[in-house]
Length: 175
Image (tube, one colour):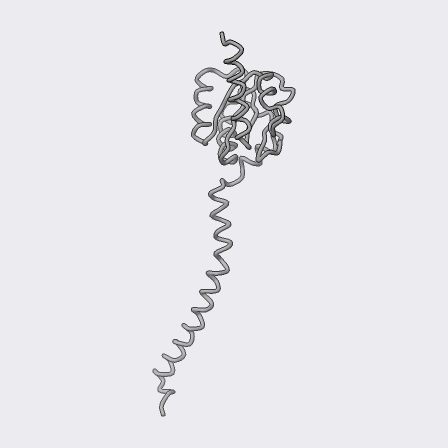
């Protein structure tokens, strides 16, 4: 049994973790078996996140005054939190894939970049491309006009070279 000081230290650690995480997903895990929970934890770690099963009152206490306060207020039932300070899309995709395979795992709500989202928002987030894919598309969009400019500029020189070459072949440049 933990004494009061150990419990206070645990609460402070949880408070720090929640404050550092701008992205979290609240889920229900009723009727999950130990093997399923182990697989879920492995999946969450693979997506760069953390997963904790915590008591509702402790979660609410740890989130008081922070961005997660609205999400973790007045929790009911068995709750777990998956959180990350990294890519929320990767974590949402991993959790959604897991939820499809294991109906005992259900979403309740989430917080993405400090904004509380509902279950449909989490599902929409899971269908988005990852940050890396979005950055690649953005760079392509930025690069495309420059590439077209270079192509057009090279076309003028290439066309001039073709005209001169054909003029030489047809002896049009005789003095």
